[in-house]
Image (cartoon, rainbow, N blue to C red; front, side, top):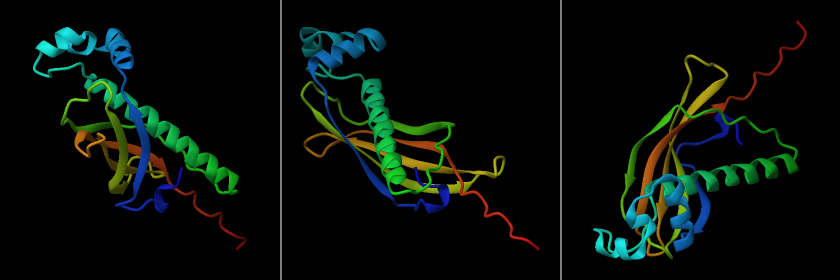
Length: 164
């Protein structure tokens, strides 16, 4: 992970893609969102969605998995180059969550992030805050999910003072 000072507003990352299968949709729904249009093709066909579709929470959880995997690969690459890694801190939350279009069985969603704002933390001077727009688009290029997350990122440690 880059240090807060090295991150630029407008920086984008492609996190990866995920294809939502009928079985994955049903497995997630059974545990976390057991609504008929996520569990049963016939019930889904009669619903306002018209076909089996993934829970919005499933699409958000998939973003989280891909984001963590992306950050792990990024940190591994930095370590391999001999570069220091910053610590990614907690997230105080998110805003503007929108499920813009249903994700149907067979859809492949490409997830991305873009830094939209950064500021130093007043209460924790060794940390900065990033606001990141997260998005997912289906194989047709149609937006299916978007939200802005906020996360703490470690600031670069101050250089030690030399002898006086």
